Structures are given as structure tokens and as C-alpha cells.
Image 1: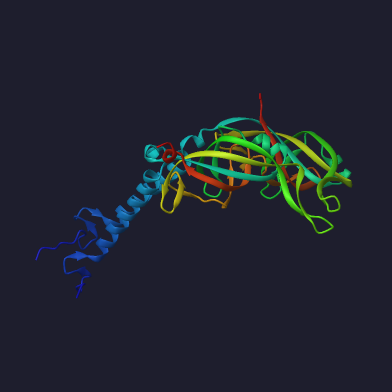
Image 2: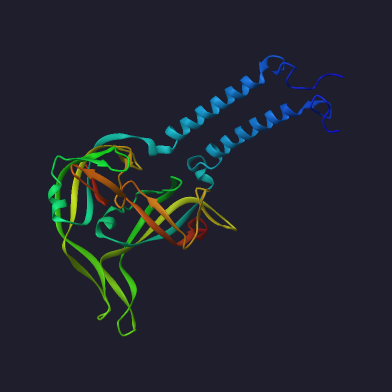
Length: 168
Length: 168
């Protein structure tokens, strides 16, 4: 019998005590992990510099003007920091169009722009991919809603690389 | 045999502290720490300044009557949550336009919509300005954000298209 009639494991340690100690240990461990293990500022020295590019499609001039080099950028869903904008390239917005005669053309959309934004963030590279601040995945072709103080935008990740590794 | 239980038969740890009290104290401490970290511990995002924010809010494809109903001095509210989003400073309107496909010539064109208008309302508000957000009436104001607003005798949805801070 693992438990005796008093609920003690091997007749020595109360199973309730073990449960309570485990609960306390898990709570403390969870709090420590949440606030100290994955914190950007605490662990910045351990991180590489990850550079990624996102494409914001078919926006108007007002949106282009609100995207500022140097601005901090965040993932809206988790409110997690995703780095700082280091470069902004404005391109004409284009799309495929099937003409009345059945031929296809790439046509430019007037007063609409695609914006290619370069972002740098402390992060890690593993065999599974790249993670901003060790937390959020950075995957090509994934879409996410991001914001700076000035603008909220739907962005598609188009490129990602480990700058620290490239510089070695 | 010596009793190895952490808690005695009255549920007291080492015969001194009630284990239930200990759990409750731990939960209170963890909740307090969690609350503090949530509201004050997220780096510089929470450094708050209060200031005047002026932003443009665009509503598209509305009637002339709708445009005429908007008057400087009107208080503007979020029609979903009811919180105040500021006061109308000015308005400007132009003929409504749409991006259409010209399939004969294989191009996109900006087409004017008859008897419809795009109106830009300039709104002034007091906001909480942090390095990451501008908050007015509990709502984050950013270029590209959609709101449902209501003023005196009118309501509609639209987007923030520009934002500046007083003195800039």
C-alpha cells in the first residue's frame, strides 16, 4: 500500500502536504519563469540580434507617414515587444488584373502603397526557427497585427535572419 | 515511530503555522506581485504623460446631410463603449472615391462616387501618452484603427488617419 489509513505516503509523509508543497513550488516556478526567465531586459545579453522584414500592403499615404524609423513595435495580440524599426521602404502597390480580353497584367493601384519595414529585435535562433525576445515566433509568410505608438497595421513577415550569426 | 508529517493533526506546519493560512498568504502575495508587474513592471511602456492629442478621423461614402450635421464643438463618443473620444475641432469633405478595376485597359482607377462624400473630422482630446500608446477615453488611438463613433445626431464607423500631439 502506497498510502496508509491516515493518507500518508509509505506511512511517513502526508499526501496533502506533498500536494501543497508541489502547488507552492509550481506557483513560485511559474512566477519566476514569467517575470525573470523570458524578460527582454534581463536577458538581452544572451540574445542574438534578429532582423526581419514585414510587408504592409495597400495602405494610403497617411499610413505611410505614420510608420517611423526608430519606433518600437509590438505584437497587438500579446502586447509583446517585437523590436524597433530600422528601415522603411515605400513601394507602389500592384496586383494581378485579368483584362476583358482574358490577358493578365500587373497593374499599379493609384494612391496605394506597399511598405517594406525592416525591424531588429533581440531574439534567439533554434533549430525550429527564430523567436523575438525568446517568446514570439518569427515565421515567413505569417501575418500578424502589429502596432507602434502611432499606427496599427496588418503585417506579413517576408524575411528573417540572425544578424549576430551573419556577422561572425 | 516518529511522525514525519509537515503538518500536525490540527493542520499546523511544524506545529506553528496553519497551512491554509500560509496558502492564502502566498496567493495574496503572488496576486499582488502579478498585479504590480502587470501595471507597472513592463519596461518603459507604462511611463505616462498627459497631453493634448489631435487626430483625424475619416468616414467614407456618406451623404451631404451627414457631413452638414458635424459641427465644431461636438463631443464625440465611442458608440460601442460610450467613452469620450474628444471634441470636434474642424471638418473637411470631398467627393467620395473608390478604387475600381478598368478591365478594358487593364488598370486600376480612382472613380468618384456620385452624391457621396468622404469626410475627415479633426478631433482634439486629452490623452495619456506613453512610449507605446496614446490612450483617449480608455481607447488606444492609432492610425489605421477602426472606431464606431457618435456625435450630436450622427453615428458611423471610420478610421483614424493622422495623429499629432499638441505643440508638434
